[in-house]
Image 1: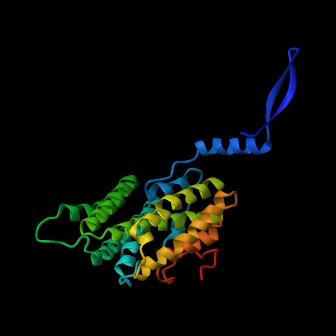
Image 2: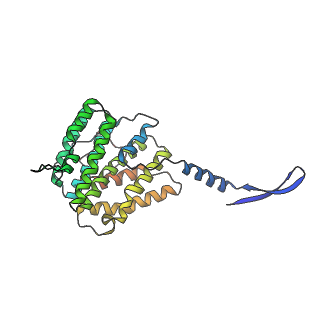
Image 3: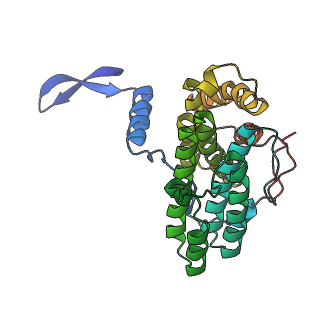
Length: 282
């Protein structure tokens, strides 16, 4: 620890006391703030709910056009499924029962090409755990928004587990990634409206844990022929550079972050939020 020792007289005795430099004091302050830092959320809903601590966001501003019905690859299909889970979380936070029902229908439709929720002669408990459309609708009608969010998280977990059991581990990871990318996209959009260093740090830590963690998976390490996987893989170093710059004391470049998250999430820019974006995403 950097300090300068200065002579001082205390009760007639001459002694040397440490006087900390400005650099050391700043470091101590930073360390203290880190110790009180907000924990990194483990689920996308917690990341979104972090915005409600000091304000009541208008979640409807981030509603998107309906989900596509065809996909260039199963990987893009899985990403879109994950993002729909997050879209339905937005609807629950907006307490919009009709939007919840609309998105539930989209979610079931997008899941079918992945082999999820397909009826079979024998009752499959995993399929039942995934397809919670009735319980989601019931929660929306009762305005049980917390219960609805728990149902969504359980449905997503079941979908990922079914894909893993079908030896589609990459697709399971992409469902999770799609939900995180969409939640981080929403958080970044709100940061563009009102930049808060604490929220920016939460976004940075979330990306570091839930997106850049892919570098150690097959998606991040192996060359990818699938266009969706290749698109994600090429964007990871760009994100890492942006986050490292922010950790060195610079403000997080939210426009660049939003551009990269959006490029990773959607293969076609046609599916947009209903709200004009303040950044150019071309």
